Image (cartoon, rainbow, N blue to C red; front, side, top):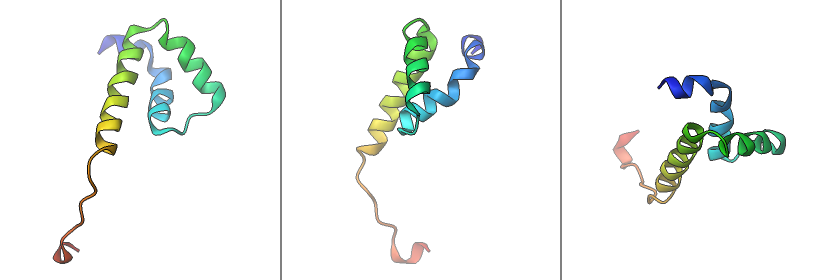
Length: 67
């Protein structure tokens, strides 16, 4: 966990990249950073895999009596 503390300023950018909401300037900065930082690169890849797996799940309808 100590490794991620050094890169705390990139956590929002990583999350925004996975969500698809990051701007082009911040994306370029993050891309440059992850080429040199193994920890941030691994976090970005892990979160992207989780996001993609969740997006591939089928949509479930709630039972009528659930709400």
